[in-house]
Length: 162
Image 1: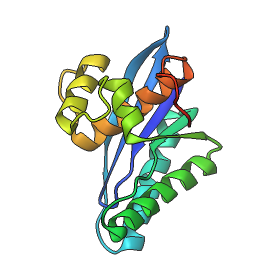
Image 2 (image 1 turned 60 degrees about the horizontal axis):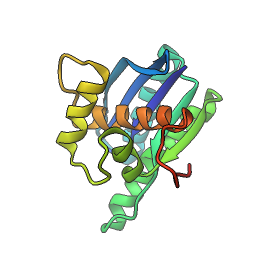
Image 3 (image 1 turned 90 degrees about the vertical axis):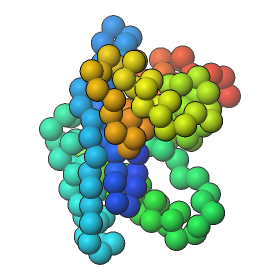
Image 4 (image 1 turned 90 degrees about the horizontal axis):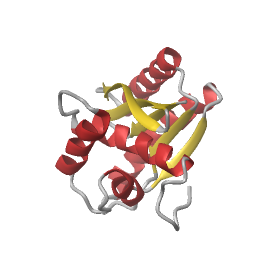
């Protein structure tokens, strides 16, 4: 089973694909879809990038971070738009989408719900046996995918809902 994790952003959208083998997360690929230009141009680039990842790696599920309430409404709107195009890409391919909060993702991967970016990066390197530390956005996307794998396997802490 392949899972695509997405860390949405209006300028940098992280993606990570893992595969479950013998009840263990195995690294497939990760990276960042960088976008620039007008808002419609950035959204089109995000959609095209995610669409290409889906076509290339054929995940069966997508895990995406649930939108949080930001202090800046403009930032929250831009994040929501980036999430929206990711959801459309998944729907276009008939992929099931699962949402998790940042707290759930960090708790599943680091063991601490308020872990910082460096801790998430380190744990992705350790858990997936990577020779290099993934970028912050790619690490967050991989963590989202691992959170879904744990949730589906019943390894998620009690009280979680997707």
